[in-house]
Image (cartoon, rainbow, N blue to C red; front, side, top):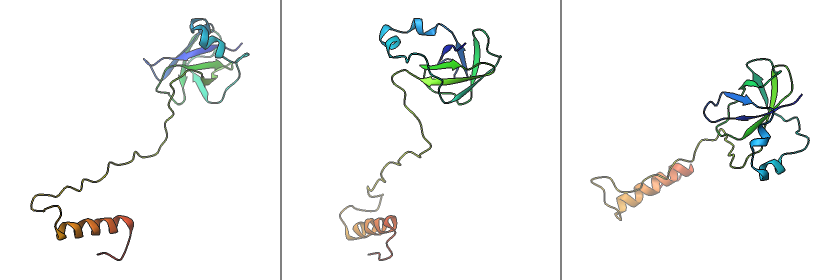
Length: 132
């Protein structure tokens, strides 16, 4: 028998499975739940075999509450994100801030030497071999 549970922020590695969790949702959220609740993609491994309400352990802990679990039986369940406000994460590096081009002590902005230095740095960044 499938059950629906919720991932709580307090413990990101465990999920409490409550077969009646949907009755605690606001009416608008209840209406948006799919009927019947589908079997969904990512797996969740339970710490105890499913049979009654209990704790499950996420294979990939999420960083936001509002993920709902549908138990498939045995020690495996599937998780679905049905709440608003989820932001996915990826492995991309953040964009570094732009380099500070303010002159260092002993340099003056607007001089030919400073302009040449900026042109050389720009050429190196762009991979150009023809430096000024």
